[in-house]
Each structure stands twice: as structure tokens, then as C-alpha cells.
Amino acid sequence: MPKRDGRAGERFGSTQPRLAMRRRPGGAGKWTATTSMGLLDRYILRSVLTPLLLSLCVAGMLLLLEQMLRLFDFVLAEQGPVDVVWRMLANLLPHYLSLALPLGAFLGIMLAFRTLSLSSELDALSSGGVSFGRLMRPVYLLVAALMAFDFMLVGYIQPYAGYQYSRIRFDVTSGALGIKIPQGEFVEISEDALIRLGSVDPLTRRAQEIFLKTEDDAGARTIITAEQGSISTSPDLTRLLLQLDRGRQLFIGPTGQRLETLDFQSFDVEIELPIIAGFRPRGEDEEEATFPELWAFLNAPNARSDPSWNSYRAAFHWRLIHPLTFLAMPILAVAMGVTGRRRASSLKPIVGVAILIVYHELLEEWGQVTAAIGDLSPYISMWGLLIAFMAISSFLYIGSIDQARTAKVMARRKTHPIRVGADGSLTDDQPATSLGSAT
Image (cartoon, rainbow, N blue to C red; front, top):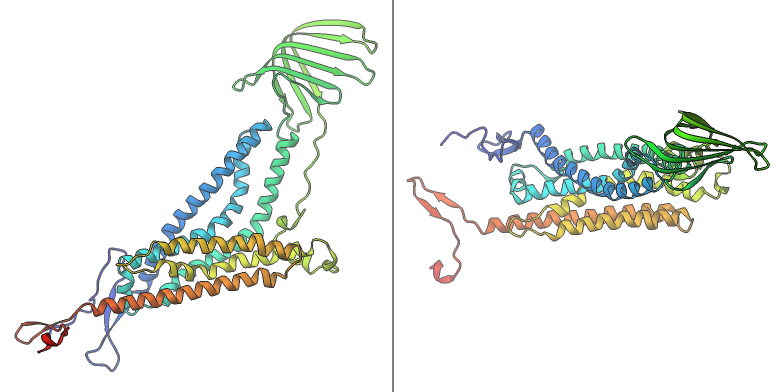
């Protein structure tokens, strides 16, 4: 008898787990296939992480790109600084990341198992004694990390990021980031000051054809015109600073008589600006409340009599359900990813994405809304959707695994073993297909 190799198996590349042959205890001549488990876990994780990260990047870029164009239009219309757009996008990132993370996790797991299935690596691992449950172990380790990150994202990071986004919008519209003076228009920058700028060079920040009128409490007016000058504000945005060149200053009394005229080559003017109102504190609604703040509100005395009780309760349950959705994600992804090599279905990935999108839309647009207005309990409208989603995923998973095993058995029936005789002759053990061939 030829000596058995202790490392017999098939290699699928440098990253493919190694199959080893090992003798079963008490069974002479019987061998079983085992796998280098550490290498298998790393291989599965690497196969999942690559499409997951790519999906997150693509989905995040698509979501942020549309919002970025809207923010540019908003900031330019309000004549705010362009760098504010990037600050607003940074605070929108947690919101869009919570939308893209479930889709990215689903696509990453589905594409990884679809690749393993089409390349027959799943068949090789199954032949080596590795079950689907064993292949799912590193996937669920990754899912556990994603669940923890998602809980921190929706429970703590999103409320603060949403508040900061609203605050920046308020600063842009209120002038807290700088006073807005449209070119060629008369603008009342305070109750007793009126200004007009002919044109402003965006590079040098110098204005041409400047007109300024101020009035004191007694009714006396001062009119200043200048050919050009620079305009800035104090660091605390309480004063407007003007450095004017080549102009004239006209003083008019309360009764309208001309008192004095002064020509100048250089003149500095400071104008008091109205006090800008501060932004409201955080916690206006349930979207700006963190998970502990939601819990504290729901357990406060007489909280049920508060008009916002239902909305806070719906938000509390949503922030629990959103991370728990990841538990069903690998089951649905494997069900839609495992396919036959000869009859690969391109419809299953589309169906899987559609199921995931419909579930999230129903959860947010129907389940959470009906719970927030008090029409249904969140245990029915929200937790019921989660249970239905898990049941559908489990049903599809069992059906897909059974179909894959059936296809594997049928493929084996189509092949016939070759018997090697003692004299070295080869015999095909193909069964007879008719009575004539049998005789």
C-alpha cells in the first residue's frame, strides 16, 4: 500500500485554508479531513471585508455627493464660507453611515460566499468536513463588532452630529460666521447703519465704490463715500471694521442742514453690529437625545402624560432594533450568495438587496412612524417587522443550503468512479443504462 500523505488536499491559492488528513481514533485505515481553523477564519474574514469596505465607500460617496451639491447651493446662496460645507458633510457622515452600513455588510457577506460558491471552494471545504455553521463563525464575529459600532453610532454619535449640523446651518443663516453684504445692494447692517458695496474682489477682499450712512440718537447723520477699501469684522463679530481709501465724509444735522465736509486719503471706521442670538441647547426632540437620555426620559415620573412620550419610545426601540438587524444579515446574505456553479442565479442578489431595502423602509417609514404617533405599539409595528425579517431570512437560508446540497449530490451521480486493478488495469464502473447494454 502506498504511504498516505499527511497533508493531502487542494490549495486554492496562497490564502486558501489547508486541508489535512488525520486518522480517526480506533478506526484503522479510516481518515477524516480537518482544516487549519485559524487560517480559515482569516480567509473568510478577508473575503468578506474587501467587498464590505468597497460597498461602504461607494454607498457613502453616492449618498454624500448628492447632499454635497445641495449644501454648496445653500452656503453660496447665504454667502457663507465654502469650508463650512465640509464641516456640515462631516456631521452628516454618521447619518449616512448608519444607512450604508447594513447594506455594506449584506453585500460584503453575500459577494464573499458567492465567490466561494462559484469557485467550488465551498464544495472543497464541505468535503473537508467544514459545515456552513463553521464558516459562519468568523462572519458573526465581524457582525458582533459591527453591531457594537452601529449601537454607538445611532445611540451616541448621531444625536451629537445632528445637533452640530443644525447649529452650523443656524450660524450660516444668522451671520454668526460673518456678516453678509450683497454687492450692489443697500444693506442695513444695524438699526442706524446702511452700507452699499459696488463690487468686491474675492482674491484681495477689497471693495470698490463704498457708500456708508450712519445716524446717532440725536438724528445727526454721517455719509461716507470712498473709491475703495477693505472690510472685515472683529474676532467676536461685534464690530464691522472699514479701512477706506480716497473718499469724502459728509456731516448732516438733525434738521437736514449740511454741517461739514471732509476729504480723506485714508480713513478707518468701526460700526457696532447687533448681537447675534445664540443657538438653542441640544435636546429639542428625540433625534438629538442619546440612548441613556431616552431611557431617562421614558422612566421619569409622569413621563407617559408627556405629549412626546410615544415619539421618544419609538426612537428608543429603533435604536435597539437597528443594531439587532445585523443578526439576520449573514443568514440572508448567505442564502442569496450560495449558488450552483453550473446554474448561477443572477436574480438572487437583486432579490436580497430588495428585501433589505423594503425592510428598512417599512421599519422607518411605517413601523417607527405608527409607533411615534401612538397608533400601534412598537412591539407590534417595529419588533414584529424584525421577527418577520429574521423568519424570512432563515427560511431562505434553509432553502438555499438544501438546494446547494441537492445540486452537489446530483453532480456526483453524473460522475462514475474508475477502479484500478491489481495488475494496473483501469475499469469504468459506469452502470448499464439499458437492458441491451447489461447483457
